[in-house]
Image (cartoon, rainbow, N blue to C red; front, top):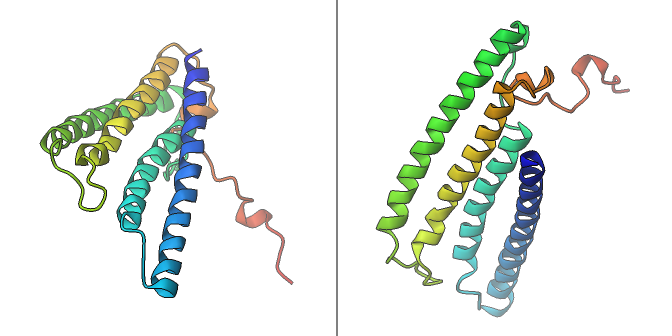
Amino acid sequence: MVRKVINSYCQLLSWLMAASLALMVVLVFTNVVLRYAFNSGIAVSEELSRWLFVWLTFLGAIVALHERAHLGTDMLVARLPVLGKKICLGLGHVLMLFICWLLFRGTLDQVKINWDSTSAAMEVSMALFYGCGLVFAVSGALILLSDLWRLLTGQLTSEELVGIRENEEVPHEEQPLAR
């Protein structure tokens, strides 16, 4: 049930990321055409694109955390016995939960400080800009807690005990030779 909710949430985030990226492309391209062809432009284009990029980055980090798609190496952990893999995964999740807490606390302070500050072009509260850290910290913590619960209750498969996902590309030695 929890996994289904998290999967649906990450699917929604993926759609939001695609929409943000499309909007960024349209804004920047339109702004470039307007500046060069008509000596005009969209005043909020640069700022909104920058905000969308920051939000896109944090939302992408949530999806990557869920899919275990962040960069990493499993050279040591893959060689450990099952108990060693469980200990390393649990320790890694506890440390990441601590980082989520630090990010939440720091971002919450930034949101409070910038609540009454507005952006230059859009004149929107800067708290909205910093809010992406809050969204990541809470979402990341929930994903990590779900995975930690699955680890503690023995619901993880042996492949899931290694905290990263293997590269989906064909290994170098299996690639056909160029002619």
